[in-house]
Structures are given as C-alpha cells and as structure tokens.
Length: 425
Image (cartoon, rainbow, N blue to C red):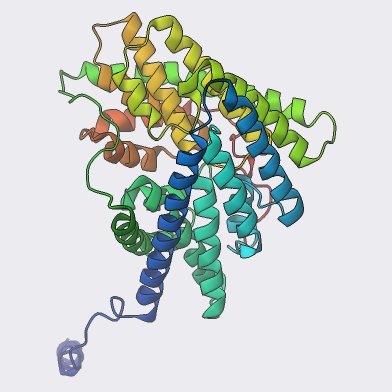
C-alpha cells in the first residue's frame, strides 16, 4: 500500500516538473491552415458576389416580354460553356466526391462552374449561388491540402472546411454554415465526418470576416419578419402542424423535379439545347409572375412586404416550384436552398390568409424550416440558419418544424448521393 502511494507521488512530481507549454492545438500548423483557407474562401465568395451583383444589375434591364429571350440566350450561353469547357457537376457530385473519392474535389472545372452559374443565377434562374460557391471553395480546400501533402481524413476535413467557408459567406452564419457542410453529406448520420467540425468552424469564421469586409455585410437578419411572441405550449403543436403542410409541398417539389428530369432525359440532346429550353420556360414563368424570377434572396422580403391576394399566392407557390424543378433538371447551375426558403415563406403566407388568427411569423419560419429539411435532410443547420437569417430568436419551434420535415421526408433522399451505395474511403 505504501509502495503504491510512493509511486503516485513520484508520478505527480514528474508531471509538476514538466515545463509549462502553450496549448499546441491553437498555435498548430493545422489551425493556421484552416484560417488561411477561410481567408481565401471569403475572398473567393466576395469576388463572386460582386460579380453576381454586377451581372444581375445589367441583366435586370430586360423586363416585361424581353425577359424571355434574355433568359433563353443566357441559358444557351451557359450550356455552351458547360459543353466546351467541361461539366462541373451539381451538388450530387460534390457529395459523392467527399464520401467516395477520399474527399477530393477537382478544381479543374471551377471556371465552367463560375461562368455558367453566374449567367444562370444573374439572369433569373430559380437556383442560388450556394452550390457554385461550395464547389469552388471546397475544391480550393482540396488544392491547398494537396499543396501541403495532406492525406486521408486531414485532406477530407480541409475540403469540408472549404465547403463550410462558402456556405458561411453566403448565409452569414458561421455555425449554421459549418453544420450544413457536414449534414448535407449524409441523410442519416448528421455529422459522419465529425473530425471536420473544428476545421469547418475555424474556416467559416475567417471566411465570414473577409466576406463581411468586402461587401460591407452587417450583423442581423436579412429577411424582415415581424417579432414573434411565445403564446404557450400550443405553439410547438402549431409549428409541427405547419411543418406537415410544408412537407406535402416538399414531396410535391421532389415529384415535380423527377417528372421534369424524365422529360429532359427522354431523348439524348446536347446540354446547350436543354439549357436553352429551360431558359425559355423560365422566361415565360417570369414574364407572367415576375416575383418568381431569381433565387429569392431579395424576393422573400418583397413577398413579405406585399399584400398579395390568396389566388396570386397560390399561383406563385405552384409556379415557383415548377421554376425550381425546371432550373434543376434543364442543366442550369446553382443551389436550391434559398429558393426552398422562398417556397416555405409562400406556404406560410397562404396558411395565414386562410387562417388569419394564427401567428404569421411562426407559420412562415416553420414552413421554411420543414420544406428545406425535407429536401436537404439538414434539420440542425436549417434551424440555426433560419434563426440567423430571420432573427427568429426561439430555436425550439424551428427545431420542431425541422425535425418534422426531416422525419416525414421520402425514404430515398432527393440528393441521391446522400444515400450512397459504396463504402466510404
């Protein structure tokens, strides 16, 4: 017994004799690498956003009937870029590469992705810039990782951190953007690549700082919702009920997308013909319903501030879902997260028109959360993103709605590569 005590005493004394060191994690090469990647990601996102705003402003000159030939020409040009420079792929390919290609995102198709997506998003396609940004910043992470001879999980983590920096720059939410880059990779395991969490957080924070500096981004919500006041335990039930209604339209969107996909793939036609046809169809929809044009970043505020009648809101909802489906399946490039938020906001407004006694803000946020979680399978990050983007400070109702959308989603995920049929490296 005395011998054991002496051994412990010697061990403690040895520990005390060791020199005091700073935390090696904070000042490690990895931390500096993640921070550097975040700075580069924020710079890329800032330059992309400035280019997008400039091109959008120029193409906004075409209005009324002119929007049809303008979008058709932009679709044709985007298709020609993809045909001659290379097909950059979509979000399905990004998920596949992260899971099954050792986390490597190929940067060689970035010029095609940047040029085609700028034309598609700026001309008024119903897809946002999040997917192009994620592809470019994620592949930048891969390139930097190879430069420093990283392999295995370290390389995959750097690619995911790059993706997170792109998400964060667009959404202005470092925590939500980081989680989104992890959640979207798998439909069941929310954070399968948990080792990438800290790299994603670090890169996101630095990316946010640079992006905010470039475009003068401030803190606070970007969508103007009226203040929400908790009225009792039944609010959670209402959140779930609104979410169930939104999930119905989420299923409708998935079905609509599969329908248009089967139509576009019925006969093998060149990509530039598909994008041309998509541009014509999108132009026709935008001509009759101008608010359905673009991906919804600014249009959500217009939707919330305008007093549209019920019939017009229903038309906007139906044709916005059709517009997103056409954009996704006709070869146009972009992401569908913010467009889905627009659809959710429209559903919330319709519910409020039918039942004016409900809380409008709760209905809108619940529908936005549920439809996005249903399609993308990202309940945690959707909750955080919406709380940041709308200023809705009560997480729990949004979480209830997000989880409802997640668990009522189709068994086979919309992003097919989330399911996976290969063994991850």
